[in-house]
Length: 398
Image (cartoon, rainbow, N blue to C red; front, top):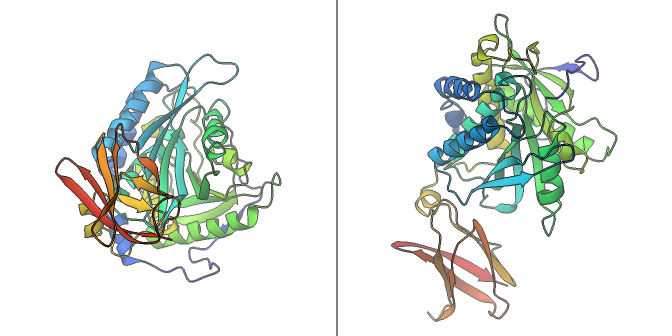
């Protein structure tokens, strides 16, 4: 995070069981996933992040950290098609910086995204707390949700350029969110920045952040609602208490100014080592970092609306491939899921068994869009074939 918060401003204590506008209750299936969160993984990720050194724009260390992140996601089962680099430059620097985006497509609302994000660049030192701690949480969330179906799509984003002025998230909002036609539909941004705690003291409270900004203010009420839900998730899925404060000076602010709905987590006991050569793991509380990860896993399952059956057998056996919208009109999107193939054939068969569409997709992207304006209304069988793999799903044309 860029600046130190004045924690007494706009802040009040919140109880663990704060009420929201609807019944938000404990979900045992979610808890089962949360309980798979690994303290060993958190510790290893923090140590590895620290060993990568100072992660400033234009440095080999920043590129090495990006490569390390990519390898972590691949090790969890995400495919190269799901992992994208977003490159940019900005005034005052000739360095090319990169954001890393990992996309997991939802089963019910594939075009609406929950963004779980945090920056991986550092200034002054290795940035093990600011923001290796948030990075470790994001990695653990991505690991545990890789094979879990969710209603909403999820983007795990590791931003660069945060410490120099939120440049990575500003670029992403301008070039990707607003550059998508139609504009990307975002359900919520959940930002993790500096959640490592302070060594040698009791770290039992996490600060939950809502939007209080007046430019614009139209997103504030929904941000407050979502932050209340985040507070409830912390109480349901971790041993931490909560402290309500305001969003400030981190990557979610680039989305806030774009009128998106934001919330975030930040350590309540604030480190004195941020932005210095001594921002090391020895001055952090890794157990606290672990508990924050548990809270955020529960919150991500909640906000993305994870399936009640979680590791759905059909979802896994079909490589998370999906065809949408369904029902469709003039086009159909093909989500390659975790099928790590560079080409495939997509065909559609009508109720009489006739092949009415047969298309070869080469150099396949994660999402391919196919025009179907000539097809009559009715029920079809959509078939994706690649090598010995065959995924078939019913498609309705309106």
